[in-house]
Every structure is written in C-alpha cells, then in structure tokens.
Image 1 (spheres, rainbow, N blue to C red):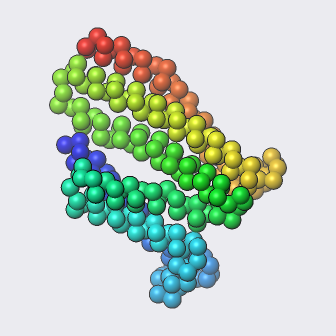
Image 2: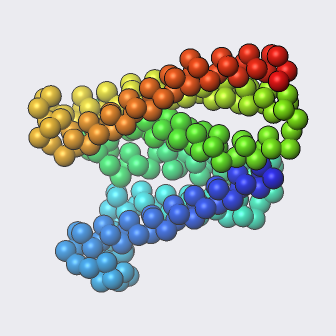
Image 3: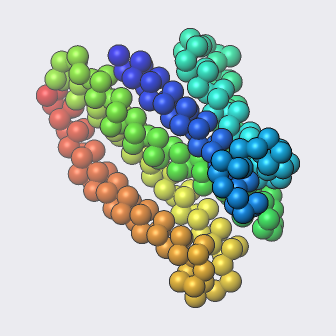
Length: 231
C-alpha cells in the first residue's frame, strides 16, 4: 500500500511537471513576443523559444518529467535499469534550472552551475523527504503493531533528520555563494527583485530550520526512548 501510494504521488508530481514545463515554454514565447498565451501556441513561436538556452533547458526538463511519469506508470519498481533511468531523469531535473537561469550567465560559470545544481538537489531532498514522511510513512506503519510502528517511525525520522541537516547545510552554503555572485551590495537585498526574493527565501528557510531543530531536539529523542521501551 505504501509503495502504491508513493508511486501515485510521484506520478502526479511528474505529470504536473510535464504540464508546467510545457506551459512555461509557451509563456516564455508570449512574454518575449509581447503576445497572448494562445497566440504563443503557434509552432513557429514555440520553435523560436526552443532555440534559446532557456527553451532547450525547459525542453530537457519536460522530457525528464515525461520519462519519470512513464517509468512510474508502466515500469516495475526495484529493477536496476528502471532505477538507473529514473536517476538519469532526476539528474537532468536537478541540472537544468541552472542552465536556464542566472547561473548560466554568471562567472565563474562552472562553479555557479554546480552550486545551483547542489542547491536544487538539497531542496528536493528536504522537501521531498518531508512529503514522504507526511504522505507515505503513515500508510506503511498503519498495519503494524504499536511497538513495531514506533521502531519504524523512530528509524525513519532519525535517518531523515540527518539527511535534512545535511540538506540545510548545502542550501545555506550554496545560497550564500549565489548571493555574493549576483548582488553587488547589501542594499540590493531591498532594491533589486532578486535581492527581495533572497530575503523571502531566507525567512522561509529560517522558519523551516527552526521547525527542524525543534523536531531534532524534541521529537527524535522522544521517539528513540519510546522505541527502546517497546511501546
């Protein structure tokens, strides 16, 4: 049941990614040409967008999301070829935002591309892990006896807590590096749109870090004690 639920959630996310990438390509054509969304559906407009770095990167993302959707829908789970293809598609999704964004036009280019990819990977691991804990783990533990359920929850939460801590460290480090590269002064945090976006993201990350710290200092030790007691 838990595996089926995880597959459904993954399939829904991949399908949403396909739709959003296709829509993003059309919207870019509409914005660049100063026209409407429906007018930008013209094949020539889409072709012009796909000829740019932005369009090529988003086309790769669309194909990667489509590949993940097909793998989740049709392929049996656990097979090595399936895992390898899914990993390749996921790597493309991690790398392409940098190719379509500021990192591709900022020096040192290779460093900024790697930093952006690491930033996306860390956020994906963090947010995806939380989604898994909330939506899948309860299904996996529902049929277990109380003692077994607690031990499984303790193991999963403790392991994810470590992953989340590493993800936050990568997010902060790469975020600081990107801010230094893109902002000329502290005043840009308020005067530039990119700076204001960084401030908003920083506040959100701080709130999530605070919640994670409370979980690590309170929930994790309590789960360990309960599991050790066999309750």
